[in-house]
Length: 98
Image (cartoon, rainbow, N blue to C red):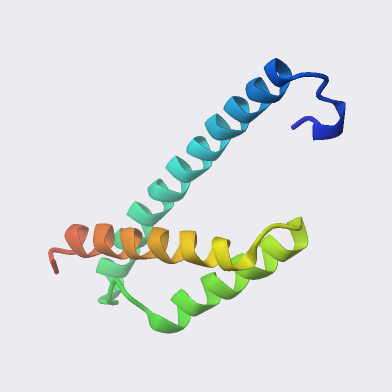
C-alpha cells in the first residue's frame, strides 16, 4: 500500500484505490472460505451457525481495529454486522439449517 500523501495526482490515487479494492475483495474471499471451513467444523461438533458471544467479539474487535486505523468505528460495525449475518446465513445453508 502506498502512502496517500505520496500520490501526485488523481490517476495515481484512483489506481491505488482500485488496487486496494482488489486486495479487500481477495481478503473477503479468504474470509468466506474460512466461514466455509467454520461450517464444516461446526457440523462436526454439532454447534449452531450463530454463536452470539462470538458475534459480539468479532464486532468489538472490528471496532477496535477501525479505531486503531483512524476510521469510523460505527461504519466498521455496520459493515461487519452485515458481513457476519451473511456469514451466518451461509453457514446455516451449509449445515442444512436454513
